[in-house]
Length: 239
Ligand code: URA
Image 1 (cartoon, rainbow, N blue to C red):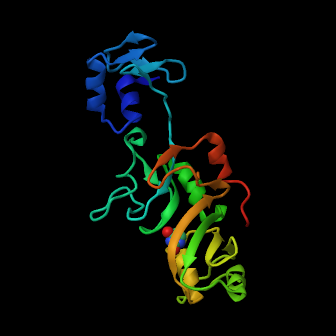
Image 2 (cartoon, rainbow, N blue to C red):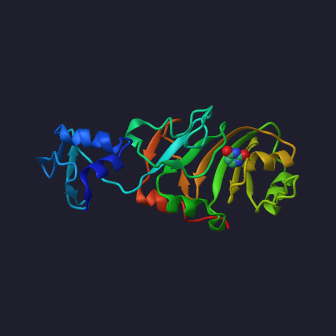
Image 3 (cartoon, rainbow, N blue to C red):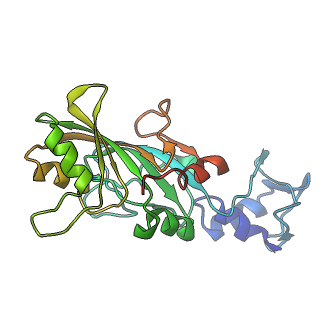
């Protein structure tokens, strides 16, 4: 059982004060009855809450798929740039959200935003080896030698070794690659290609584990993950 104002505040970007104002204004109904008591005790599993006539579906945590656009940074706040949290549509906003993992400012594609720290930790832990798949447009051709190098584990100039990765041609296109890595080193994909003497001119993440970016989700848009979507992240990885 929890206080009504606390529950309403936890489900949006509204603060406790705003939630209290809303309750006092008569905009909140509990099980069909207007409730103006800010500290009314609620059982989220059984009580039906409505705010301004709309049912409030209580979620302890949320898991958001964003098709990240280029030009925003994967952070909660930034002095210079817009962040992925800044561009969240209103209906997804609530306190405590953060990007689970990072894409570079110029990288597009699948990003998970959540307020569940344990889930993010599980997804990002190097021990879990969750695959991430990228489509990389290159300024040079993919060679058999490069494919072998990726397979053997690329070594950066500073001696840092990458785990074996898969490099494939995208639809037979010699200058567009599908890369699968199971770790998340800083600028990893760009640096792996740089070792092979080619530059990445466009990068898009298309999957994490077996969860693929929804091809119908426009760039910059978001949708909530289902429980099945969440499970897909952790099944069927290459290592
Ligand atoms: N590798 C990169 O180089 N950049 C990204 O954004 C993700 C992986």
